[in-house]
Image (cartoon, rainbow, N blue to C red; front, side, top):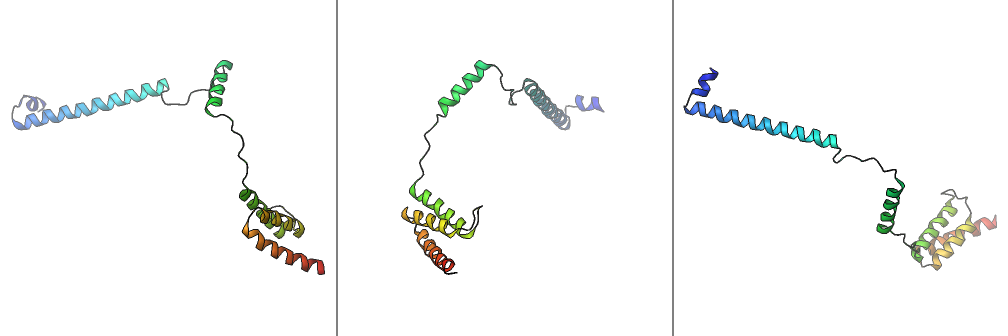
Amino acid sequence: MINDRFNNDSKGGLKEKLRDKKFISIVAIGIFVLILVIVLIAKGCGGKSEPTTEPAAQEKIAQADNEAYPESTPVEETDEERGRKLLQEGMNYYNGNGGKPQDYEKARECFVEAKNLGIKDADACLKWCELKLKKTRKK
């Protein structure tokens, strides 16, 4: 039967021969890819390398990092950022949140500073805080 297939010169025999060649080609490509993967894994291609412990190499790496990422001067906080932080701190004192004790005087100080820095919400908070201070002083 096998010999008949290869000795047959008819169309059916030719199709079988071509099909066998395609199958062999696919298997050969699969084996090649498998060998390539094994070689790459064995050589460590694409894997994590061990950090070097040589002081000279570490110094070169540190120098390259310093050149690539020079230390910049710290960016100063804008008035609005500072005012927003003061507003939040004042709210924390007013409500006794954020690890702050409830202290209307300190809240008032924060709200005044925030208002002076141009934070519009601080004005309303300041008014509420002053009303609360008046009520607590009367008691």
